[in-house]
Image 1 (cartoon, chains in turn brown, green):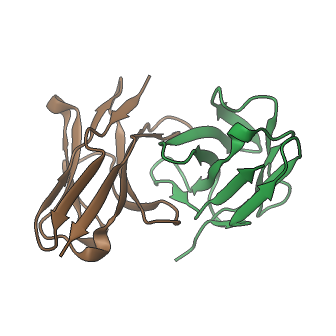
Image 2 (cartoon, chains in turn blue, orange):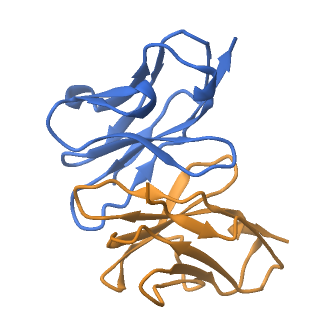
Length: 114
Length: 113
């Protein structure tokens, strides 16, 4: 069965500092990988996705993520965070077969300090 | 940009009552999903729907749950006899095809009293 691990429950970074959120997945074939962001009281907004091809993918709001098959990881990065980036971040794995249900990690809450 | 819309944003219901959560997926999408997120926990898959039938459901999606696409635009989740543990945020999502990601609505917060 597919699974996602986000080892960091809560991360605090200073505004302007760099950010890396970790994600490890377990999946029997080539996965489809996603990062979603959830602001308080809001839905899930897609930040970026990996389906195939270049393992470094660019997303919205200046985020990027790198797929490393050997490490089963898909870490999210941003070179300089803004106060508006404070939110909950979810990594998810799906498949390219049929209905592609998503399996989510437990999320990482990001706090930005001035 | 087209959005998935969900109504109501918050639903309060007495235990044992039936509740229907409504979703309007993006218009040209073909795959539809419901997920739920219990407070403080991760988002969990409930059911997927394609070509007017359920394509997959989780063990959470028992006989108390049903989904329907009553017309060309709505996608509903019904819980027949709600329990306290059904209290959660319920998200609807839709997807155009296998090469596109799922797009989520803002969710309906369901509170069972």
